[in-house]
Image (cartoon, rainbow, N blue to C red):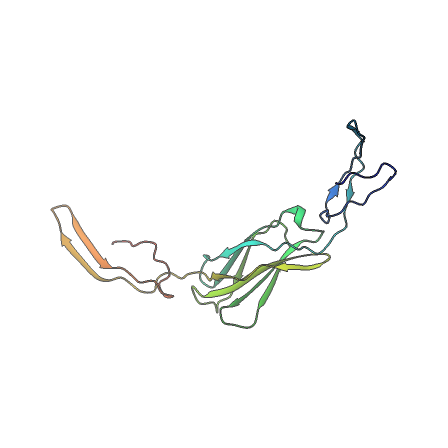
Length: 192
């Protein structure tokens, strides 16, 4: 902070974070230098305020059929700005105008799973995550696109052929399955 005139016996400290404990010391100075600091004051907590920092790294996906998994980076304690901190999750199918809202009251939580049998596999959703505390609702993140869970592939590979290579080997080939909503991301094949 700025140096305060020697005849002044109080100062206002500004730009502190809400709902954080601080202690203060005072140091006297003159043209020769600075003296020893005072003993620390008692701890003092600033007043609570609505949280202003939105969660980041909104993503998700995965899960099982009929699930929408949403994840985010949790907000550190020093940015929660008060008691009763939690997260607000808002999501809607891409192209829809109506948001679904859920509240997660756990401070440490960084994941929300929405289950609904009407969700089709690999459907894109617009998702945003916000914060709240006892003072009110805070900032929402920007919109991220998250896909619902996959189903097992519904289409079998085609064009299967086998070629004898030697007395102990057979080479098996097939046409790969193209990615679409019914196949999902094919991670591998099993030859039987």
